[in-house]
Each structure stands twice: as C-alpha cells, then as structure tokens.
Image 1: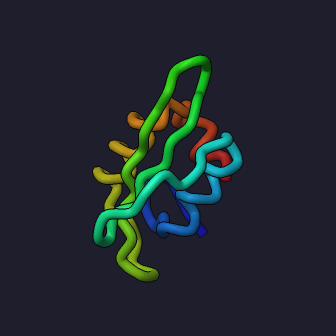
Image 2: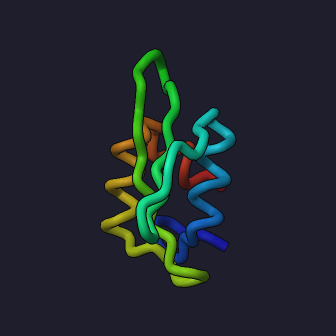
Image 3: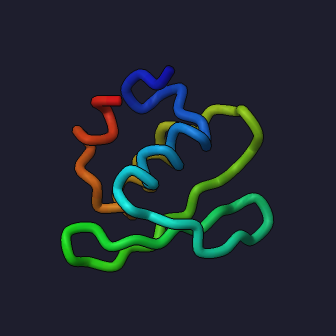
Length: 77
C-alpha cells in the first residue's frame, strides 16, 4: 500500500491516472505513455514499468507534475 511518495507500483499509479480519465496512448519498451485532459489542459504522462518494483519517489514526483493532478489527490489513496 502506498505511503507518501514511497512504495508506489506501476499498478497504483495507473489506477490514479485512470480514475482521472487518462488512457494508454502507446508503449515504447518498458515505458507506458498515458494521455488525458485534466482541468482543460492536454497532458501526457510517462510511467515506467519494471514488474512489481516500487517507483522511485523522484520519478513519482515527475509523474505527478506531468499529470497536473494535485499531489493531495495522489496521497489520499
């Protein structure tokens, strides 16, 4: 279970993105690119997939910035 910015997996991140209307656009290697429209702006988010390994907190911060979804919405999961 995610706590703060630590221990987030690919599946946890994708669940939040899909809740906010993002859909998978394409895949290149182990990176999945999601597109969506959040607060009237088009967004593209790159999410790395490495099995069940946790996404590093710095990478997760980048994903949060790319998505435009407020950090509080991510952390209340």
